[in-house]
Image 1 (tube, one colour):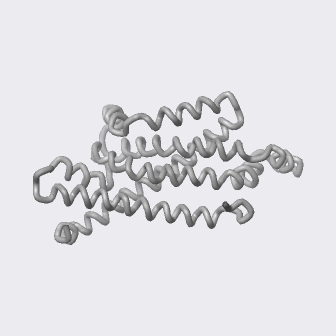
Image 2 (cartoon, one colour):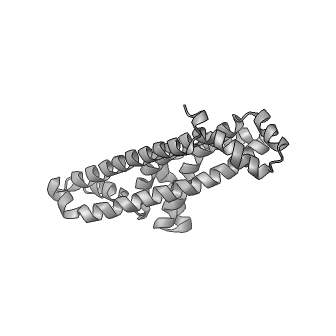
Image 3 (cartoon, helix red, strand yellow):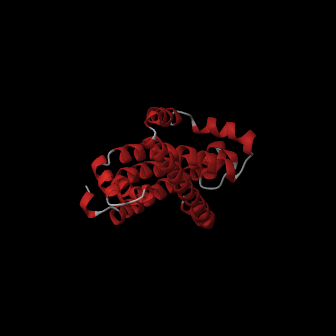
Length: 213
């Protein structure tokens, strides 16, 4: 194992960077999409059960099956990888965003409006800060899930550490098959833990002291 890593450490670092970059960019995009949808859902109440149902059903779709459907449409490479990671990343963030925004007291919102705040100002200065801890929990769950989904993207020749895992599985019986699979899997786990720690710190820095748990 040591020799395997020593001979490929630059490639491992590069693929780790690709993997992390894909997940971070996809989660940021997913957060923006989820927040926009959550605002729409909490504004027009009939959409709430629809959003909850889509979140639940979407998470049951196998990643490989969805990727297989995407390849004939958008081809192989980075694009299908980004699409599939964003799709799965949106779901838990959307659910938590709806719950978080719904939990904001209507009295506080009315008080803010009574002070002359616009709808946009109320959202960014009242609703979003109060709902942020719940939303961030969804972002953390989404990030952990996206690390695994991004590994599946290697099936479509996407970037990241998934290629090591798939190489190991496809070469079972060869000398380095186990090394490929173990290095890829272990690196994904380590990156997931690091990102979660960063998000936990971000939560401490961006959450008002008055509403911290």
